[in-house]
Image (cartoon, rainbow, N blue to C red; front, top):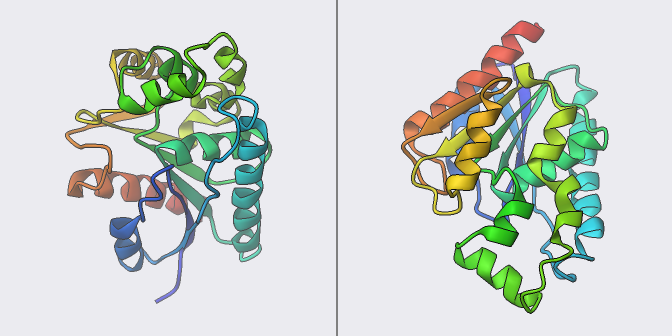
Length: 211
């Protein structure tokens, strides 16, 4: 068997391991690179710049190494990991394709208006003062997408993901004009068989075009 491409796996804040994707790698003749991302420990607003920069550097370093092999390099970013991945690309990381899995499209909007417990905890950490949260808009996936080729990008959205509210679905509806947005009967983990197959088929198709 000859490996055909590399896939970098960027987890979310929960650190959920890409168990199903790792199991899929051999079937697609792929080499997977699961990342361990740093835990966020700073100020809810002021600490984000350094956190995103550190995460982007980790992603870029991992993407640079397999590129020397001459094989295509792709990445999956799940949940917050998708926001980190998008920011890395915005900063210059070169990839042949990306899949954003269950990513909140605007963390800024979610943090200011979201009713999910994590959004409420975020506002509580700021004592309810959200006046500066808007300064974090450059780290939103929606901002990073301006630097990403729509043809090399797939958004996977779970219909039963509790982190995605009506505002998020409205944003995804708007993205459909340019990007591939696939809605799945899936939850936050996004590991249902059809969901899994769709993202691997997508990057395999891009790899075939790169040959």
